[in-house]
Amino acid sequence: MAKRFLLFLVVISAVLFGSVSRLASQEGETSIHVEVDMVQLNVAVMDSKGNYVTGLKPSDFTVTEDGIPQKVATFGEGNEATRRVTSAADDDKPGQLHIRSRNGAGDASETSELGSELGSMMAGANVFILFDTSNYMYRGFVFAQDAIAEFVRSLDNPDRVAFYSYSRDLSRATTLTPDRNQVLRGVRTTVAGDDAALYNALLMTLKDAGQNTGRKVVVVFSNGPDNASMVPPEDVAELAQSKGIPIYMISTREAKLEPVSSTVFKRMSAATGGEAYFAKTWREQQKAFASIRNDLAHLYSVSYYPQPNPNRGWRTITVKLNGERLRKCRIRTRNGYRPESSRVSAGVSSSSTLEPTSASSN
Image (cartoon, rainbow, N blue to C red):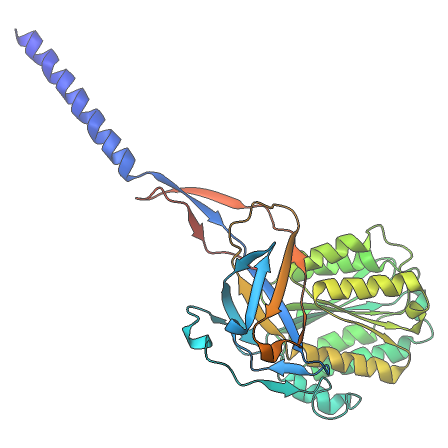
């Protein structure tokens, strides 16, 4: 009888323990956390005359990805601090529209005065300068160094500047630094080399830039076509688009004489939200650098977390302006990106729902 009673207690204990275990398991169900990359856009807005349009609000922009409407997460103009867009209520009121000349204040050729004004508006940008030191540059080498040095001196407030040079190989003369004198020493110590492997060097520069947070831009000074790269320009452009890094190309008349290179330069810069300049003279090179400074000072920063999208390949981005007053304005930004592989982690929580975690920037 005692044995039967003991067996009964054992059975009851097992049943009760199993029930408690199942309840504990249900309360601590595993939830899946998925990291979703924030997509950041640098958007230039010009009127029909080519002047910059300022004073726009988040509600003035409509962003779609593969036709799927996106909600603006952060917004900023020029070099003001970007802010989180929590509600459209404050932005529904029409903002005051301002027009600023594309050349900024005064003539763009007056690089010292212009650089001082615009440099102060560029706080926060990481600028990567890539200089062609191949044999294409022999005749204009010193003039090109002068133009780049003036550009560097005019950048008073960007966080950091890096100076790279290339011929067949890439030389990281000066990595990202706030020390302008160090960058200038890097510019002055460059020497002319042999064949030009522009796309190889540009790919490595983009990879370096992509490892840094914040706004990034690559400025390329090239004197001729690429004759030594193993990397096709299409791969370089796609990486820049996916990383959200505008490419500005300044090229001399030598590249302009080579139709294939000039076409590639234009397409690459346009696809990434940058611009291409073909400067025949030293003064035109200075104007091109001044135009780049002006452009960076007037970009809108618009970001969003992508809505669910089954497309794991190339995603097309479209940015449009709302309202009749902006109908004739022109927008320049990158036209798409290829998402990185999703990063998924598991954890224990009291909910079984799918939860996004904080994201990194593209």
